[in-house]
Structures are given as structure tokens and as C-alpha cells.
Length: 340
Image 1 (cartoon, one colour):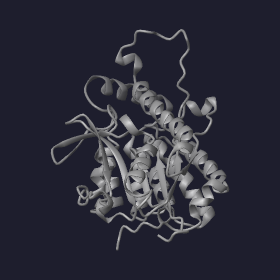
Image 2 (cartoon, one colour):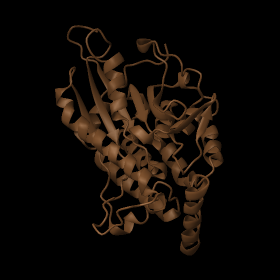
Image 3 (cartoon, helix red, strand yellow):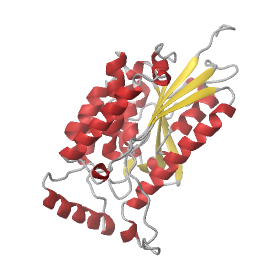
Image 4 (cartoon, one colour):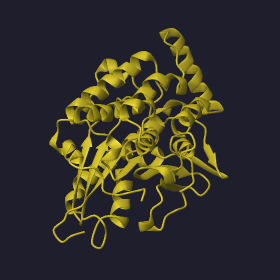
């Protein structure tokens, strides 16, 4: 790197959220549409958790964001089966909750696996077009696990031959929703347990291996894409001493939303104190109307919910695509080469 040359390391991060990945994918599709530029060609690193990990892997395979959004819209109800009839849906949701409460997860992983196998086939992490950070959780040793693109900067090659299908299943194995994923005798659960907003993962990886003195890049930029967060406040009269049955699905959702919010808050406030310096811009979660609150959850995939998520994502994408902070990521293609 020349003395006066500034190489910017660009990072895209995508939150988890189940079927709400349709919102995030639609944002990226509208940005691609308005800029005329492919997302994967413009980010050196892509980080994604859970459903965001699926999107990150697909982008790194060279798939257009619109194709990913179409997959969620057309296939989402296969991953999270739900009736279009309100009465049947009510009974179905109650049955799924009791199943979730008493003996197994709500859903089978088979439909998701089938979709992932069509999307990724035999593609491995070593064949990605971008650096990757995909959080999961190792249940055997009780430690976070980040699947990465193999790179010489960190002398890191252990994930080179892992199939993207396995990484996608490992990062999205949401407790009580989908089965634990086993790979080579290790059990994995959803990365949203500890990094639903994976921006800090991307920042740490960047500063450790790629950005700074004697490294290829002199500065960094992070574009963070949120998911849809439902208002989670409870009335003061709520039951205090709650069993798991009373907590229900709010337990996992509160964990995901809380740490995603903290990661955003932390980065927003510490970014100006980091050296080497960089920037952080987050496309926020939308404000939900009362009607929308009941329509949207991480596993609600009936047609009204999907249309709502797509509409909100399209609107947020069109708005984001004219923001200078977002457009600056597309001034030039990515610099880091995964294939030499």
C-alpha cells in the first residue's frame, strides 16, 4: 500500500430473526436494484447470524439479493408451516407451542435442509467470494463458535472444507424452534444465543487480521442490516414469578433482541474511540403498527406476514439506497481477494 493510499475494509453484517430474514434480504435487493451493483462484489467481509448467516453465505456465493428474498417469500412457509385459515392457524400455533414446551422443537429441519441443498449444493466455505464470519454456539464445550472463510492473515484454515449447508444449519438451529445441528460429532445451536447482531464479530476480525499498521487496510466501514423487532415491553401488572410456559417464546426473543440492541449501542458509542478509525452505519428496525405486531414473528410465515415483511423491507431498502452513508459502500468494488 502506497504512503498516500487509503484502503477501506468494508464489512456487511446481517442480524438473525427467522423468517424476518425476508425483511433484511428485501432491503439488500432494493439497494442492488437502485445502485445497479451486486452486494457481494462490494464487501470484503460479510457477517451474518442465524437467518442472517444464510443470507451472508448466499451473497458470498455470488447470489443476487433478490433471489434470496424470493426464496424466503416462496419457501418460507415450508420451513415454518402455517395455515392460511385463522382458526386452523390458532389451533396449529397452540399445538406447536405445547410440542415445543414438552418434548421437541416446533419444526423439522428437513424442509430447511432441502432448500439449503438446492441453494448451496456442495459449496464449501473455502469457495466463498468474501471473507465470512458466521456465529454459532458449540453445545459440547459451551463456547461461541464463528465459522470463517479460511485466510492466511490469521493462519486459519480449519473451516476450508465445511459445506455451506452445514454452516447455515449450525447458525440457525434456534432452540425449541429447530433441531440442534450435528457436524463431525459436535452439536451446534443458533448463533443468536450470543451474537444476533454480528457486527462486533466482524469488527474484531477486521482489527485483528486486516486493518491497521502493517496490514493491507488502513481503515474500515461497517454497514449493519437489522431485523424486525417487536415491541417487548410488558405491563406492570404482568405475572412476576413465571414458569417456562409463561415466558414462552419471549424468552429466546428477549435474549436475541437485547444483545442485538447492546451491540448496536456499544458500537455506536465506541466507534469514534477506536484506532485505526472507522465508521458504523445501521439500517434500523422499522416501527410497527398495532396491526403489524400481531402479524410478525420469527416463525410466522403465512401470506399476510410475508407480504408485510417484504413491503417493509422494500420501503427500508429504497430509503437506504439514497443515503450517502450507504452509497459510499458502493463507490468501488471490494479489494480483498479470496481467489488468487
